[in-house]
Image (cartoon, rainbow, N blue to C red):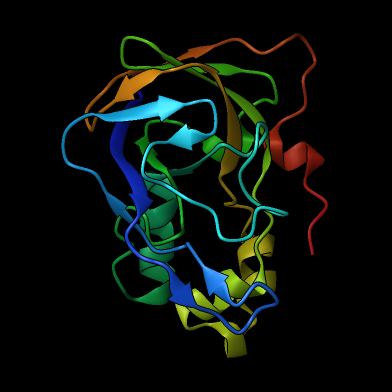
Length: 181
């Protein structure tokens, strides 16, 4: 059964060498219930709203199984939130989720898969991998995670069940539409 390992929100803003000058990629797990509104998890922010947030990128989900794979590749722990995700989930192949499929998380929240994450240099700098081809490496591994829009608001907490509701027939997967870098 698919479940929510951890909901994560911004811990603090950090200076960043990118064009915005600030990043909100530093996400940490939330203890207890966290409200989910139209633009994502309460107490979360996006520093670069041109590329993050809004209706179609309100929530970023990443699979625990993919994080475990990266932990082995990098030789270090990849705790929930490190990749900037709002939801660390288990039991879901997030990168092969179908665009338009909906996830009922807990009792009331419904999210809809919209698109893949495209890795960027802010992510590479955050990981300390900017000199190691992180953007290309992450892209080529095809373990991207997915952005979701909020269909129904409510609250979520670690341990909540995730029920996947079918996507429209013939819907592409997140990886089908990924253009790479």
